[in-house]
Image 1: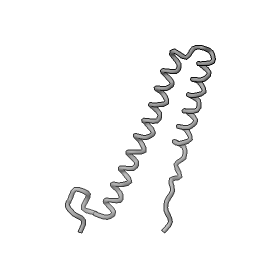
Image 2: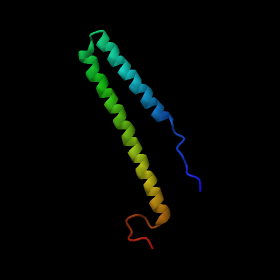
Image 3: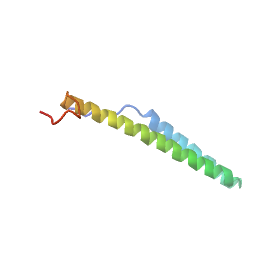
Image 4: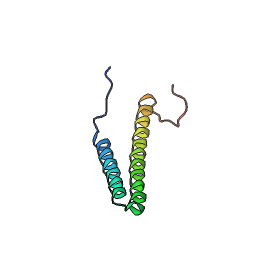
Length: 83
């Protein structure tokens, strides 16, 4: 049995590019001595992007687990023990 691997790399790439650009803008703002406003907002953007990425990944994992449970127990996860 071969293990399936995810072919969805776009979200990881976009998260990495967006984070790299945000850090680049932070360092650029520090170099121009404009860090007071820029750093706070871009650190928020980085945290928000990571939170959205992890939240969507969590929902995908829950859907995957529901699929596994329904494959093992066609009655559903709340209908008693697997027989």
